[in-house]
Image 1 (cartoon, rainbow, N blue to C red):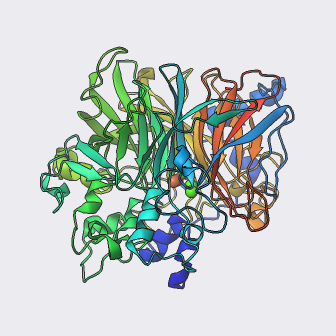
Image 2: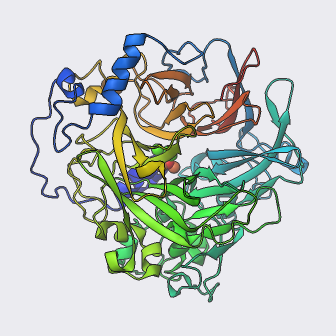
Image 3: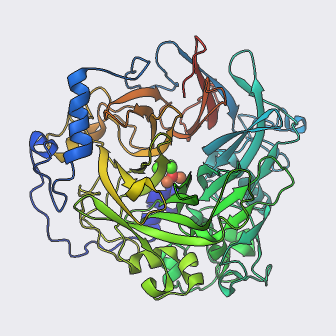
Length: 629
Ligand code: FEO
Ligand code: CA
Ligand code: CA
Ligand code: CA
């Protein structure tokens, strides 16, 4: 791979290039997995260690759905698409709400041009690039949306640099400003919604915004730097991927591939802690060449201050964001908060890298509506999930006794703590979504080309297991669990697979997918997920969109809706070629939904000659004004 191609890599590919795993982990239990599709789905026969996983939940419920022929979906599922448009079912409409470069304040009106992008002066006054996690709030009669801008495409943001590599401090500043988080007020317009330019709530939070470190890692030697000798204040939240909403209506933004922002300008020996997180070598955006904070040879502790869930209060534009270290440090996908039956607060957390883990945080104290959340996200226990082959599971507490690490080390090098307790290596845990109608939660396991092939970054064995049952898993699956006693704070659970994505046109074995996947709804790489208030699971994909070979018949990335009861899954939306669907929230009246379109190719949405692709938030609604969520 030529160095100049670095910006064409996904974050996953970037990690693999920078820190390739050894080719074998002694995985020698490769048996013939070409079981017949029927046998596989009958639940009697699985493969690897995953026998009998498909018995109760998925198979029987799907069969029941087929028997009564009922569908709860109030739309006609759509076909795949391969074009540069957003498609929704008949009777629905869509409209772009806001695009990369659109003004949040009137001084930035017209700041974006297709030729030059956005100037450095205006780069923190416009909507950022590559929209991801998103939540909606009502504050004093106003509607606010908080939304992440996960990363930038430097080739289109720096038109002067053909290779996309910044060559000045100003160019680095521009890239820093176009990422992070946006808080914006929106209001109903003739069709859909529009951004309220100059709203007092509008805010950009970037890689330079000052924030507070809270929780057990605050003040630790592990997070002290030259600029912050006390280890209490940090600049910036980085690679803001998924999101979450607290029970007290604040925003949780999740720092995912933070490792890629750090590099070194001098000799620097990589530590085991850095290696586990893919930190070292050259940064993706050359920050380290212009800002010593990102230079490992000068500030080796700076990366220890990123990779957290950061809480932001959208109702107060002057509030200081807070990094919640008690929720652990890893490549956080999203943060799904639920109020457990016993009153404690639980946050489910995925770590999106091949063979990493699924986590949950349980607060020590209970919380009740109307009371202060002080301490709820700072004082609690972190657990990693173990999925047993018999469809039971346990949450393994990451304690000093169990891990042999100090409490501070556990929160700073959480992956190593989860390895120490032998949690289950997963196929890249992306979003977790909890069913609002019953005590159960779902996690999208997007794919894992290394399953059964190579160990994870910590050298842990990644042979197939029941929850991750396919070697070189290119399609992904969704696992769900029911906590013991219907209490999300409980330390045990039962689980099954809601869906195994696959291609029944290409394969007649496990790669064909589970029975609720067919030629009419197939997809790959589930990623974003959210439940609507009516208990339907919305599934967004971030996968192969080339519509060829193993992925033929899947088309562009898409959003589907799954019925948890019957297993039925129907395609609701397709997004432009090249894009993934990210982030999902609804207006309070449930009549409008909002989704993100990240990394489109071509000229969407402006569609003129010479236009650049612009990541955007899109609103969708039913023409008859009925509720959709
Ligand atoms: Fe930013 Fe794992 O998605
Ligand atoms: Ca994602
Ligand atoms: Ca992605
Ligand atoms: Ca993804």
